[in-house]
Image (cartoon, rainbow, N blue to C red; front, side, top):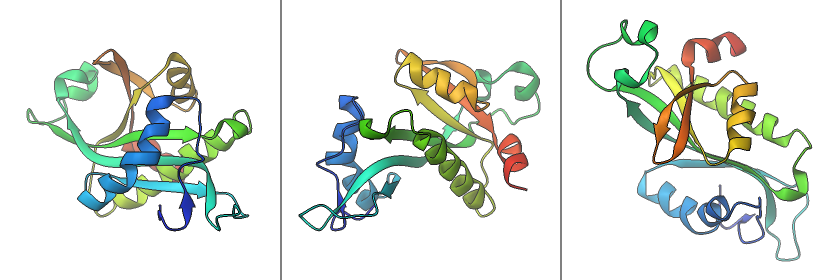
Length: 167
């Protein structure tokens, strides 16, 4: 994401928390080294010469306790926190809801994280679902429920599974 090229102010996915993130926090988080936000912009610029954002995703390194994983997986892992990638946000502008852009954005995010995994290993990708609709979306693509954190369902997909998609 480049705040000089991408029009963050016009983004509206229908969820205030996600709109606020892309409009006010994403660039600051990138500058601070907290997360990286990738956008899928429109092909034509607005009158302000910036490109509207059709969808975006944000990723960050993270870790989880092995105790939150299913027992069959946990017993194969060390007793200290396990490195994961956090898919912190993924949103599609409401003009594109139902168009398949969410699926495309998720595939791009998984592919990007798979490439990173060859340089910096992680056990899985986790996502904290903002809504039940988000939970259904991720479940459709192979994410499994891990636990509940701060009232949100946390889901995961192992990097082994992601690797099967791209190798």
